[in-house]
Image 1 (cartoon, rainbow, N blue to C red):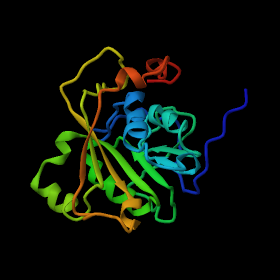
Image 2 (image 1 turned 180 degrees about the vertical axis):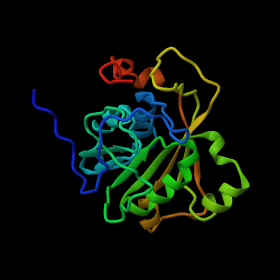
Image 3 (image 1 turned 30 degrees about the vertical axis):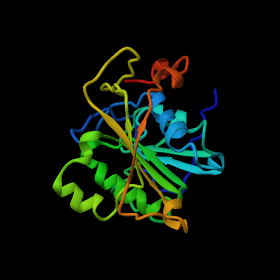
Image 4 (image 1 turned 135 degrees about the vertical axis):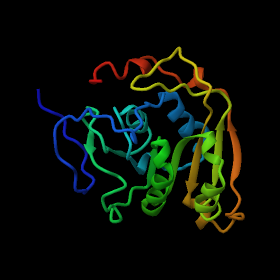
Length: 229
């Protein structure tokens, strides 16, 4: 069987075989597909021409989020610093290697918690249309983070999940629960360019309504069965 080609994004990629060493700084928590669909259908639903845009998922893990994004964008570029076996992904360090010349329309990902600030900084410098980051709601707290990030580059929207988004290490689980709250942070460049833009130092706070049952699809929790752990 012919191996499927990986999408090219004009980057210099690290080479090597499947690496399964899980460094402490890496997070291996696949995003439930419905949580990604919630961003696209409940938060970015006002985005015209989304199916003509490119999107980069730079912490793609086993490709769970990438597979969802592929249903909405013209082209999705997938990469991760660790090779988790997703055949469309390139092994690439989003933070360490220079990517200033790469200009996707959107950068969307669930970044490692400890590296989320750095991911946001890099993503907002290269994305032409916007950036969306799935983070713990706890990420909104902290004087240092406020001074380094939110005071100088606040998101245009904070979309808080009204229901919990269960995430588990190395697996998807449609029946699990969690005590951790999550939200999507969105930097939408259209607001900056719009003549009707409001004070960009102010973020719009919204709530994603209960939508898990509406946005779940058959096979969502079987998506990792074909990939190695």
